[in-house]
Amino acid sequence: MARSLILHPERLLPAEPAVRAIARDLYKGVARLPIVSPHGHTDPAWFATDAPFADPAALLLQPDHYLLRMLYSQGIALEALGIGDSAVAPREAWRLLAENYHLFSGTPSRIWLDWVFAEVFGLEVRLESDTADLYFDVIAEALQQPGFRPRALFERFNIEVIATTESPLDTLEHHEAIRASGWHGRVVTAYRPDPVVDPEFEGFQVNLDRLSALTGEDCRTWQGYLNAHRQRRAFFASMGATSTDHGHPTAATADLPAVDAEVLFARVTTGQASAADAELFRAQMLTEMAAMSIDDGLVMQLHPGSFRNHNRDLFTRFGRDKGADIPMRTDYVRALKPLLDRFGNDTRLSLILFTLDESVYARELAPLAGHYPCLKLGPAWWFHDSPEGMRRFRLATTETAGFYNTVGFNDDTRAFLSIPARHDLARRIDCGFLAELVAQHRLEDWEAAELAHDLAYGLAKRAYRL
Image (cartoon, rainbow, N blue to C red; front, side):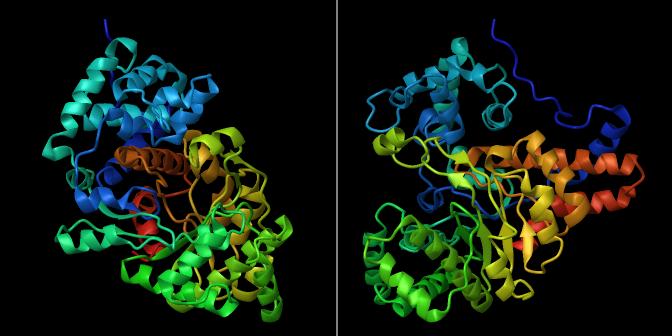
């Protein structure tokens, strides 16, 4: 007999009854707030075309690197999940997920997916081997209905605004199409320049030439290259962008004299730059981007500290984002100093910092954000966007940075259907944290209610200038 799928209404709230009662009241006040999703990786083509999603595996399994990494760690080949040129049928890939769904016990992936199964598709039994086909059929049939198309789900999820992420080489034709369609859903872009600022990014040299062709600037010259960025940033802003995003290996910044920056750029464009040259160039470009942000008002986001594509064989066979990215130790105090020496006191700059290195929360990030006017802290990110990770973030940063040097929550996902689940999880954890402060008489109940609202909605909207 299939086991029931039940989402407890007080899940994730504190276990102590008196604190749970406070958290329950706080959560009721924010549970139905609109979703502000200021940074993520959903595909704008979904909202431009409003075409039905293909099938359960293509929607929920194959794009989700959280799922892929866990299944791969247990010896399941990515080909068997339908990745790459695999001829595996979607139903077979889905059955493999169902047979191994127990691997996700206790993980945030389990929380998100169970929410999707229960709340989006109305399933009442757990995903396991015996229910694999039931799940596939129910979800596949639902995806053909008008109420499960991207725009309908956007509205059903009560999303106020969502930001996608595109490179400077993207023509943003899907964003153009969304605007021209007359649909009222707000989908904006964000400027992610990694393919043309990281000399170690695959295709970097070709990308420089593509940027030249797109902008009419000579991106083999330093000034032409900078002008091309300014031009593309302005175009992105015209398409609704309020932010940039930088996924560098480290948080290193530099502030070279103009002549030295030009010489470095000349080395980089030869294709023979050393690893040290590449790191210095990325560092210089963060400072250049900060200068541009002061001019055009785009908020900067820095997402460092991931050793991307660590599994060389997987990257060679399948490309990026297949679950082989690994967190690294990350320095911020010394790394950011060149940029902060130049712009740290300038209130026109807003730089949001993320980390995969939790050891720096209390030692580096909270003190930095608790001092420099230009800095704010992004939420617990990626490997730490879990109940425990979110709570550790609040415990480590609040005493030094407070709440208002943070930016609320963003979901940072390409898994569209899990967005409400992720925001709900964050709201429950934050309400639990605030409830403990109320129970300890460190906050009044009305203060906690205001904070819960800001953490769920207001801070993200203000920080990202949305």
